[in-house]
Structure formats: structure tokens, C-alpha cells
Amino acid sequence: MMCAIEAGRRGRRVVLLEHANRPGKKILISGGGRCNFTNIHCRPENFLSANPHFAKSALASYTPQNFLELVAKHGIPFHEKTLGQLFCDRSATDIVDMLGKECEAAGVITFLDTRVTEVSRPDEFVVRTNRGELRAPSLVVATGGLSIPKMGATALGYEVARQFGLAVRECRPALVPLTLHGSDKDALCDLSGVSTEVIASFGQGRFREKMLFTHRGLSGPAILQISSYWDSRSAITLDLAPGKDLTSTLRAATARRDFTTARVALRAALPARLADRLLELDPPAGWNNHALANYESHLHAWPITPAGTEGYEKAEVTSGGVDTGELFARTMESRRVPRLFFIGEVVDVTGHLGGFNFQWAWASGAAAGRAV
Image (cartoon, rainbow, N blue to C red):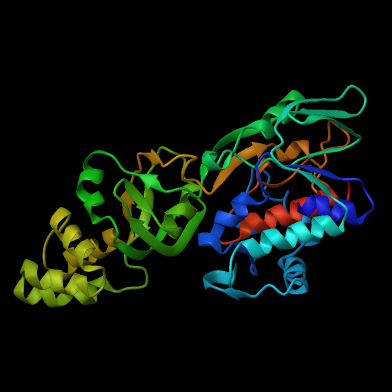
């Protein structure tokens, strides 16, 4: 929609093919129905890609402030939550309606319930659909990733890329809850519903946010963030009490050297059920200062190896996609196939949680729309 708006404003004749019965369905379910439509702290460092520099050009050309100007133009009330996240006050419908009005003003023709069955290029692009055939000198692929298949997600974008000889990097679920297995699941999953602030770390990723225990494993913002970095094999590291001096908290327990005092002390720093479970599973090796210091170090760097993820059904985005080496960063046009463009989630650019993936959609869409 953003690409269509920008292209239509330039006098281009634009047809937008939408396979759903209404546009923007993924927008409507985002942010609990209020759409975390951008983040005021958006930087290239908030994105993962095989080429960490690729997103810089598009993000610099269309910033969160540019989108906010559009939001202000339509009088949409919004508010900031934690960490620069911007949400609609009312409903995500406001954003979809805004984009729809801008498409209409730009002369964009939208076909709903349209399924693409074949794409070819004898001389110009030919797109065959269940509603007939369309021809155009330029084609933009904005089909998203594999996440949330119940919303209609398909691999069409990757198939089109491969058809025209473009490389596609391996896809996997990202921003997704992690599952546990074996003894970890038995020991922890009955804590379902317990939430606590942690620092989740893996590789270059490090996030201080909430973690939630579920009946299958771990979720919450910190876990969703680190899932984009996790390599599906190794342990992630959790600081279960960030910024807290647990040695001082537990030192009172050394006087009595009893479990009850330690439990009370640890409950002062952690949710009660979690504190009790940690002491049951992995109590301090002793009650002297050295043993407590070692115990604190362990709780600040608690390793746990996930069994896997909840998959594309629960993933907010898809990591991987059309290789950025195949595209011009300024325009999103294919280097191999002139006038073929790929934008948004179908490209190997994955944002952090918190509005960054929407900003990539707006920025990459605007880049292509200004060039097509």
C-alpha cells in the first residue's frame, strides 16, 4: 500500500493485487489490535540481515517522522509506550483506513480476493490471476513472509524470486516464543503465567525486557527478541535479576542457614513462585559468602537450551528471504531483472520487536514507489 501510494502520487498507473478480502489484515491484528506502527528510535542497528548495511538507505529516506506526518494529516491519535513504541489510541483500523484513503487519492486500483497463479515476462510482466490477466512494465512483490499462515501467508514471493534467478536466504520463524523439552519443561512449565524482567542474551543480541513462562516454554518480549538471534542449537543466557544485588538479599539467610529464610530473601527480588522453584531446583551450594556469590553469578547468567520455537503459527515475522545482494538498496529493484522490485518482509531484513518491522515496510515501500 505504501509503495502504491508513492507510485500513484507520481502519476503512475497502479494496480494493487490483494489476495485477502480486505487490505491490511496483518496490520489489524498487530499490537493487540492497536498497531505498533513505528518506533521513534528506529536505527539500522535494530535490523538483522546478512548485509547489516542494506537497510540504511531506505530507512534514511523514509523515517518515523515521515510516517508520523501522514498520521497527523489524518488526525489519528496515538501514544508512546515503552522504548519508543508508538500505538494507535483507538484501533489499528485507523492505519488501514489511512492507507486506503491515500491509495484512493493517488488513483490506485485495488483488486481484492485476487490469487496470483502465474508470473511471467515475455517482454513485459504478465500476472495471471483467478480474476484474469494483467500486464505491466514493472512489478513489485510485497507478499510478506511465512508467518501466521492462518492470515493467508504463502511462499509466493520467494517462488517469484527464485523463478527469476534471485537467491533466497533460508527462512525461519522470528520474534517467536521458544519451547522447552525434557527436564526443563517438567521443571518450569507449570510456572505458566509467571512474568519477570530479565536480560536475554545470545550472540550479538541482548535485550532487557519481560519474560513469560508458558505451558510449553518461554515467551514475552525478551524471548521474542532473542529468538531472532538464536541458532536453534545452543543455550541462551538469562539474567534473572538484572541490576539486583542478590548476595546482599540472601546474606540474611547465612545467619540462620535455613531454607525458609533464603526463600523469603529471594522472594524479595523475584516473583514468589519463581524464587521458590529456583531454590528447589538449584539451591546455593552453601550459606557462606563465597557460595552465595557463586549462586548470584549463576542467577545472573542462567543458561537454558530451548527445544525449538512455536513455529510460523506464532511468529510475528519471518527471518531470511530475498538476498539483499540481489537488490539495489536505494530502490529495492532487482540487479538481475530490471523493473522487478521486492519490498517489506519478503526481503532478508528483519526488525526487532517494537514497531521496527512496520517502519521497514513503510521505508522499503516508499523507496520502491519513488523509483518504479
